[in-house]
Image 1 (tube, rainbow, N blue to C red):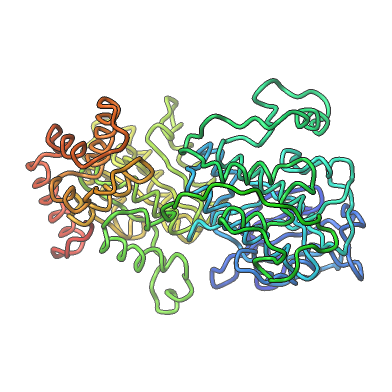
Image 2: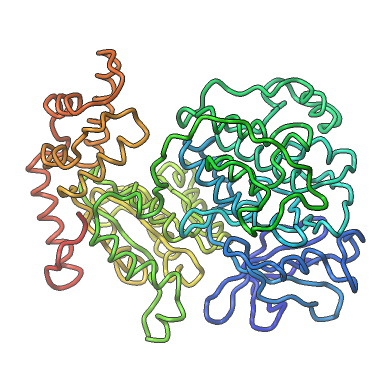
Length: 594
């Protein structure tokens, strides 16, 4: 029986929305009176097999999670039985962010350096499980069970429904688990060990780099019949590795470690996640777990194996996500962190002081200055679900069709709350009713006004970007709709240097590149100009047959290409900024942005 929204299935917590109804459990997002959110899992005891029960009939999933203490495993808030004494429940920390599966569906694959950093972070979590005195085997390591924390992009490991301690024995693996991430020994009810988790981790790494799991049969023809049987047949042939990735070259050391993790015989793999992590970090395998320091040759794991001698890894740059990926903009980022992100993350603290929770934010300024890029990084920094909306997404040729699409957009956002709705080119979606000659726009604007009124209370934050804010309907700019407005102007010296560094990252470079000098040569250029200059320099490298991008390539591109936004346009935007802000605040504020 599904629990309805706004009801209180357990004291102090109300249901905000349903997440998923599965065969033996239903999951929900819940919130308390202070705005704190959590994840509620309500089990169906009549559908839970006996092998998932521990001592006293308590669910193994609950027992295992309550015994774990790791920063990247959701902590248990409470567990018990719902009123009536029939349905057990588990209340855990809610992790803001998206699953790795969703990220890969959107981006296909990750760049080589971020993929390695992500996998190493995930390995540390699983190494903790494998390093316990009674090791825990997760048994369902798949991309949909890896949540990328929206606050720092590091992975959380979720869903311990099939997890087992080594001492709990080994039941057959359910057919519902994606077989692409299971080794052959798990298909026929064989023993699953820490080495079985290692295979799954290798498969996750493979998909993260190449956009598909190893031995992907979907690249040839549809599978008819038993997928597990078909995969077993496919795995009798050597693993085919794509010649290249979308995100850059993979060194031989990393590729050899992935192949070892995907070995078909358990004894040929790394014994546990700690050993896999050690190999990627260029550390020789040892008889001690890098997490617990305890011997790794334990009951339930495979015996010692010899790690091949591999080439050392090249150093990689740190992963830059959220505001860390935004060059410059120090004052704007600080303002957004203090006045927008802070209240949204910790609403209780602000409401105690009588401060309202912001409802929306409008970014405006010249084209090419990074408003859309900043909006996307804002979503990462905040950690909410992020939905980008363009004018085409809400346009309709039917009478009242656009209004219906707007209403549907907000209904979906409320179900996904907490959620950021990013309205790109918002002036085309909510034009001024005074300036428009099309009277049909009025009803559409009215729909936007109605939907945005205090939508922040429902967990929906509206973020918008515009090059022409004067064309947006004045009613939408008032408090209660767009509470905050920020001018995003051309980058200053420090910001230009950082933008050059961001766009040159991952390309073959001469170590003598001087970012400060490049910034000094590009005064008046916007962010999109700098990306274009870097691409032009790369094209010149191809034309000349050189092997790396040098200062002379970049200097030549700067000389050949002028700024896309002229000086007169910048003066006009500065004048618009002063007028626009004076009309809102009653005085000329301090300029924020670059």
